[in-house]
Image (cartoon, rainbow, N blue to C red):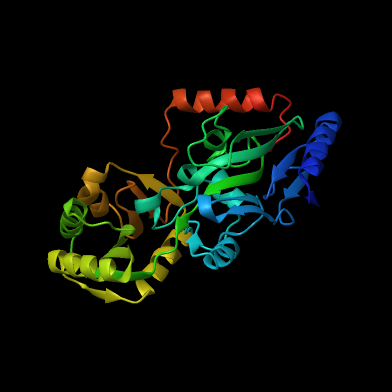
Length: 309
């Protein structure tokens, strides 16, 4: 059975990696697979919050909902809404996102700086505490989606957004893949500022509108006039979360081919503008051999001893 190491400080992770390299053992981060499983559960501090700059710095073990509860006191939020309540480190390592990806992007788009611990124990930082900081290598983007194979994400500097005053959801029933694609096309081409546009397939197109109360009511009315449907009071996003949580794969598609993509699916939560469908079946890695070879070269460069499992 692997041992579990719950670290509390960055230097503890550095020491753990150095010891593993010397002993020839392997370390996995937040999952089984190594001789030692490294847990960030106790790396759970909000280190800084610059409300005036809409930024904060947190340790990797801070959970999304916990952070947003704290930020709500200042009328701000981290615009990530993946299923469950993952840690910030997990959001970056797996490039997690939810319906608000339509407006705010993924973790990759909201990270402005990171501190990481490499497999040889080196502690490295890049980025900063301001949104336009571009100094040094962008380790945040490099580590985004790395799944713990390049090193430990220890601290993250994040871009925040104002918490919306109001929100409303429109659910539009659709009877066919072609109808779903047509509804999505109309909404995307309209002068609307949507926070989310998902297809709950089969069944409905879900639209989230957020902002000031007056603006939300106006845009909701315009979306309803354009696409029909009825107001939903949260159940549709619960269904989206449930489908994304139980999905076994992420199918990528060209957004313009939404109709044909839906026609080939039995059930999915579909993020239209991102071209991603969360499906029940495993999906082969869409990257070509050249991309995969490049990923392996980067991994081998950062972890030549193969410490990270």
